[in-house]
Image (cartoon, rainbow, N blue to C red; front, side, top):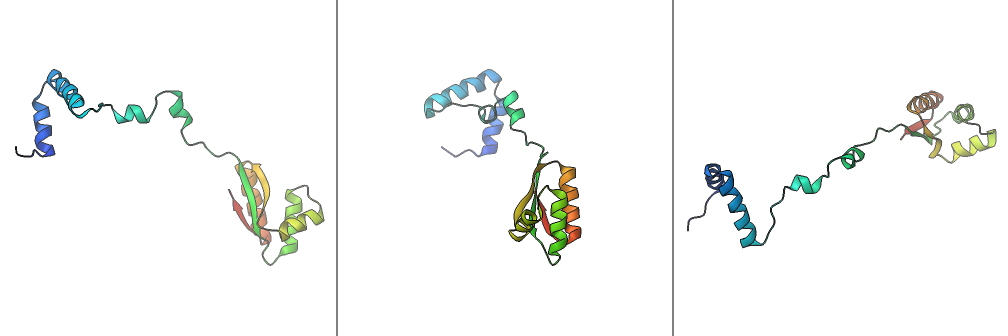
Length: 127
C-alpha cells in the first residue's frame, strides 16, 4: 500500500460527512487503543481558574541600595530622610550594601526614593 501524505489524508477527511468522520475516530481509537481529546480542553480549565492564572500587576516594590558611590555621607543623609533609621543604623545599612532599603512600597514612593538616592550618588535597584 502506498503511503499517504498528510495533505492526502486531509483531503480524504474533507470529503467525509460528519457521521463518517465520527465513525472513523471511533475505529481509530479502538485500533490504536488511544483516546482522541482536544488538547486545549485538557490543558486549560475554563472559568475562574484561568482568571487566577493571569499575570498579576505588581503594586509593591522593594528599593535596594546597591552601593553608596563616592558621596557616602550624602547617601547616608538621604537614607535617614527616607527611613526612620538613626545615624548609626543608616551608616551600617549603607556600608552593608547591597541591602533592601524600603520594602513593599508603592511605585510612586519607590521611584521617588530611587531618584533621591541616585541624586545623592548611590546606585539603586527597584524590584
